[in-house]
Length: 255
Image 1 (cartoon, one colour):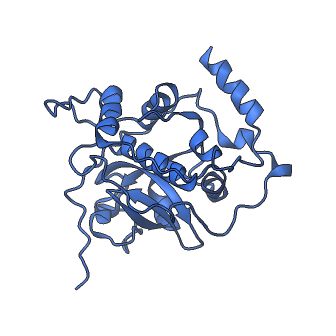
Image 2: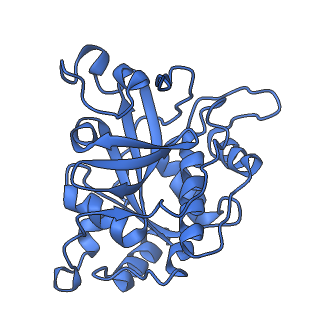
């Protein structure tokens, strides 16, 4: 008998998206002349043997657990897998959110921008990202560009209650209302590591999870492409991206 999907006991932990006018946008750094159409199918997670829970079964650290899964995927692709210990994932969550690992107090989740800024400036488990750029979640080609060019896409979902028992996340028959209403369960951060014509694949709660493109359109409320040396060392330098302009603009907003 197949295992029944039931995620009701799992933790979420992504706070509401925060708009920051300083956040750089992917669209501003794409170079159409050098950018090939995204492949119809990409799977960067195929080489990963197992995905640790990274604490997200007991606390709302999905924002830093998602970062840990990105690091694991990038370094596995580079041939030298790194699994950031749970303690370091939780320490990053505590630094960003104010969570106290000793008492368990202030487990209130975290904002994705706060995590991304901490990850870039301080690092998580000794691994930092160079930069991040926001996507238009509704622009499907940008989503595919992020996954294919940067190795994954760090996203936020306003999960509905209906997702608690779905084997494949999809918009319920009645639509995005009632138990299918965006955010009726809560916010969740995950990385997209694969896609094809029918669906996207994310990492959550220690496993791969498939969602339909319709689910993405209904429930994704923020998305970011990440530039990481862990991915670049695999020889995957993004083509069609104006990295010089991105680096220059990043320095400018920091000054």
